Image 1 (cartoon, rainbow, N blue to C red):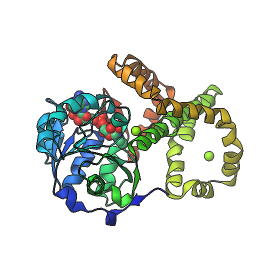
Image 2: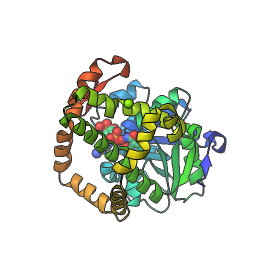
Image 3: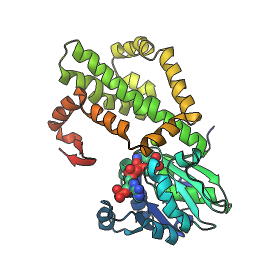
Image 4: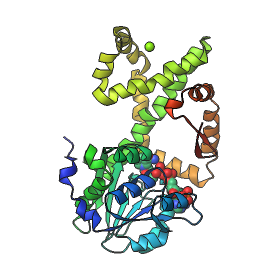
Length: 340
Ligand code: NDP
Ligand code: MG
Ligand code: MG
């Protein structure tokens, strides 16, 4: 049984007694900084010069410092920049990371694959919310919390776990429950989940389903509703009551279809492919290739991103969502989110 921590297991006063630097103000950064501030924690944000997010942080009432200064000022430094740039940003953090301080992460990638090697006299811990940053903020303001994971890699002070749990409480995670893990387990399961099921698997399933229907002559708008729009409604049921509640809510026809068709789609060969993904994650092949891709100009990354954006399911979806303003539809244009 995984060890779980809740609000009453964490002492908020520990993190309230520390100076906390949030490095980065993106998806996770803004959520951690604002939730901690609302929890009465002394927070400053560390950003690179000319950051487009500086105004956002300041408008939210946060003080912004250059990365190195924020690290020097803080007792606890949470690194919330993209995983592929964290090692570079860490070089600016390192001089301020003196004995007894705490270095924190929201994902174990750079510690697990040794691209960041902190000194032995600091604590190294992880609080990883199991949800996108924007939900970490929204759910918190609604009084709830996104569940999370906690791990300690180095415990120089002997207090690393207690402080990490206090941090987790400050951002709302202990309201949802925080499971204890290790950097290795968090990193490997997180990468596997996003590749095999959440992002890679689901996106491929949606595209394949859309292609089969439209290639067979069915209208793309109907195909979109069937394989993408309705997916959320089905997942909402699973989220509340597992597969059982989803199957309770759908028709018997759909339930029988689920039982007989599922194994024809996710065949033993698919499971073997998943095992291949896991092996590449565990032996460092995935990390090595991802780091290489980033160090050589991200040509493949940008090319695939463009190709994927041109998929017909994206075009028809954009048009359909315009007539559903209650979905709060958005578009990503040049890396920025805009309302449509
Ligand atoms: P983002 O891509 O949203 O981070 C963007 C921030 O990082 C911006 O403030 C950006 O600066 C800053 N940044 C990028 N490059 C640099 C640089 N070279 N120097 C200084 N600052 C830089 O990251 P996420 O929030 O997605 O991810 C942060 C961490 O959280 C990662 O470890 C990720 O794995 C983990 N995580 C993320 C989740 C998510 O929901 N996205 C979920 C769980 C964990 P600027 O403002 O100048 O653009
Ligand atoms: Mg991830
Ligand atoms: Mg149906």
